[in-house]
Amino acid sequence: MAVAAGSLRVVTATSQETLLWDTKSAQIVTGLDQDQDAGPWRIFIFSRDGTRLALISGRRVTVVNATTGNVVSQLAIDIYQGGGTDVVALSPAGKYLAAPIGGGFAVWDVATGEQITTWRHDAVLYALDFSSDNCYLATGTFDNLAQVWNIESGEEVARMPQENVVVATSFSPSGRWLGIRTLDGGVHLSPVTTELLIDEARSRLTRNLNENEWGAYLGNEPYNKTFLTLP
Image (tube, rainbow, N blue to C red):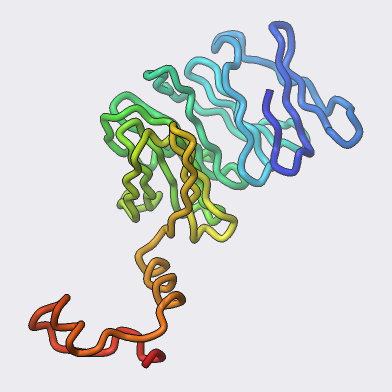
């Protein structure tokens, strides 16, 4: 079973049928027919905005409109199941799909089926989440790392070492912050970019370093006020 954002849609599955429900009316929207060649669906995941639903079976991913149940796209993807985890993420409006592959993880364009970006990572993947603007992907792995990646360029935007295995990551609605949950039950909130971290520091400071403090920390670096609006 999976529940869409806002709890407007629920998908349920038995060995005989898979159904998409409207939660307000408690009525069935449609039955979702499985591809007999691909085998039974084993993962159901709604996009963050609740508009798309991905159904995954074997090497086939079917993306449907969560309002009508109509098929939007079908992708032939061999999703890696190592480590006993089934970690898949569908971006807002179903633009991208992210999933583990052997030796790393990747992002596909749902409309074209093209694998657009691939990352190599040896540690088991436990968490995936897309930012609301479809620009960034957050990952959490067995090696105690939360990371943020630029989807188009593949570049690492942020690296956030933790003290335990990262089992969940979640962007804030603005995409400026990342929530991180670790295996020991810890929950952390971190800024996604260096610029945001600087802004956060600025909001907490009451003054700049004086010249003596500057010299003690920065040596022969020429003195200047870091924040011009502070004394």
